[in-house]
Picture (cartoon, rainbow, N blue to C red):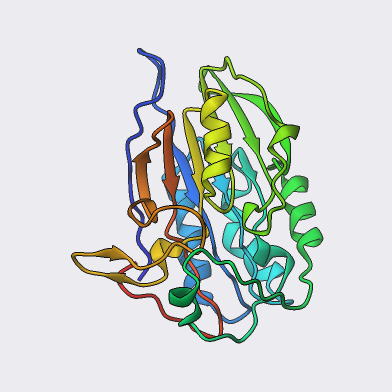
Amino acid sequence: PFRLRPIDVPILPPGSPDLKVLHVSDLHMTTTQPWKVRWVRSLADLNPDLVIDTGDNLAGHGAVAATLEALGPLLVRPGAFVPGSNDWFAPTKKNPARYLLSPNGDRRHYGERLPWGDLRNAFTDAGWLDLTHRRTTIEVRGLTVELAGVSDAHLFADHYERVAGPTKADVAIGLSHSPEPRVINAFADDGYSLVLSGHTHGGQLRVPGFGALVTNCGLDRKRARGLSRWPTGGYLHVSAGLGTSPFAPVRFAC
């Protein structure tokens, strides 16, 4: 089952109204997942002030329509997004045990190109902000919110220098699909109070009492899911994700 995890992040100026941010990540949508479509659509009932999508929406060539059906009620809300590698490349068959042999995801396996451009254009046509190497400021509930993002750091496509610079907004949120420490450190150094990421799937597998086995990136295991204070400043939130590879449709304790 899918789970919505409400989390309070104490980053707003004193006396500010609450901001309700819905963080969605790693749908890995296929054409045959009506239960996932229904659940994601139901999130619109939360009436979020801002929707953040941190990538890996697709898991197949025909999945754009299903992804838009799932996110449709949320596209009328203010939103922003960055892509993940599985928005560009289809998943491939591989041994799931490779995550244990290469816990930082050092090996790369690319599938066929996916129609990311079609999904990106649909998002932006609906009014969502493409934060791929872009930095912008919006007004939400009377607060100045600065948003910035990078492309997928898992494939070393991040170019933080394109959005670098200190922030003076009421609240600043950074987006990176993969929570690579080099990117989070850069956001923290510029004064961003929160970074939102996905990618880890909570560790792919979790052992009760131990936690995540791997993160598939440079992040330490204890931060593989949920909210944590970042050592150099601000907070990191990592979504455990909503999807799986169609070749290994299983998560455990995630």
